[in-house]
Image 1 (cartoon, rainbow, N blue to C red):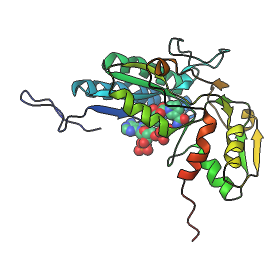
Image 2: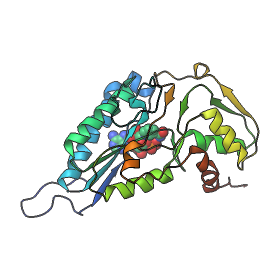
Image 3: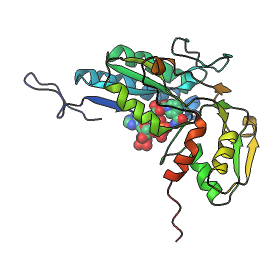
Image 4: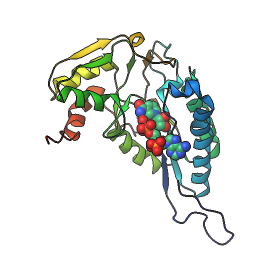
Length: 250
Ligand SMILES: NC(=O)c1ccc[n+]([C@@H]2O[C@H](COP(=O)([O-])OP(=O)(O)OC[C@H]3O[C@@H](n4cnc5c(N)ncnc54)[C@H](OP(=O)(O)O)[C@@H]3O)[C@@H](O)[C@H]2O)c1
């Protein structure tokens, strides 16, 4: 983030942004269990600081929240009116961040995403593509469900929403739901060698933090505002795989 001090005769920012996109976050769900203060410092207070700076610059603020603010107990998809029920410190820090951001910046667009993946960074779908292309086995959770969501349409929604006057809280995930095992099998079916996807129970994996067994959101407010650009999760793996460069053969 750019830092600058206020002056009486000019804008406090060296440039005048029209929108600020804050994708920074303390994202280690397990790490937050052993160091909750670090998670709250970044995801709540840090997010509030960015929101205040955006408001001071009179810029729209797009902030990213999470499907993990819900405990997954609901029989239907959670929409924006459902009260958060976070389990674990990562989820609690993000839910608190949502409240602080909304209070600090009137022109806030809080997008709750989940199962997000894209090129670069650490995410399970990128690992799936890399490992299947290399002919390696992929172990994928079969009993935890979300809406795997490619970052590309989320970016489109982010840019479009920030130009509207409709500030608020939005759920922003793909339609439908899948386990990561189902995702890996779908990825294997559309272009990477179709082999060696092994479904495993979450309990077999070394996760510490509690998380929702089923994290599925309804994009009700995006839909009602005419801003929803997210289709079924099944539409994305082919385009995503095409976007991942083949490994250098050298
Ligand atoms: N990925 C998902 O499935 C998912 C799901 C739900 C919500 N979200 C939310 O979406 C946002 C982006 O997630 P992501 O998956 O892109 O996370 P990520 O890959 O872990 O990236 C987080 C970024 O935040 C930066 N950061 C961390 N602490 C910071 C600090 N104190 N000051 C400045 N920058 C800091 C990191 O910088 P360094 O690399 O330099 O540490 C990193 O670039 C987060 O708010 C996350 O909670 C993600």
